Length: 219
Image (cartoon, rainbow, N blue to C red; front, side):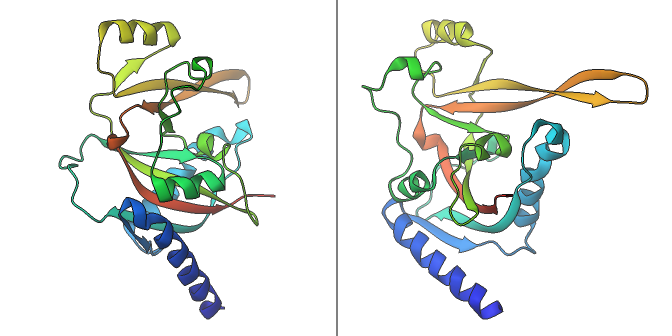
């Protein structure tokens, strides 16, 4: 019923508000008639249309929460800001909402971080969705607005090591990902690919959490 749904939304808002209080964000539900709801819905399914032969599940939207900073920030020029996705286990989502993103510990083994100790975000929501845990058939993705203006292009680990040698300050890098698939026509089978980008962010001030996206996971 409508009342039951509204009560559930109120409880969720109160829960998230309590988490977000320490990192100074306001939160509100995005109405499904709003442009950003429609944009995010299309964004989430963008790669599904091109990668449905690659076993990615289609994400079915349940609810979107919009987050805004309580204080003014310095994101004046939004032309170079992209909406990128971060997926993780639900307890980690709650931790990020309460404490903000945290870089991996200095004592963590370097071998686990071939591109350095940063936060990896992606244009491809489906890639990040694979990292999400579910609770009662529901999972959470974080939509983050990131300043990508000064992103350094990196093709591989060797290229990354050269970048570090030649540049003292590296706050964000961009990694291209090629997604291969098989395409059939009437006479022949041929392989094609499309490209999207992942971003490794080392300066956490460049990341603004903009949305919590709640979606249903297909059984």
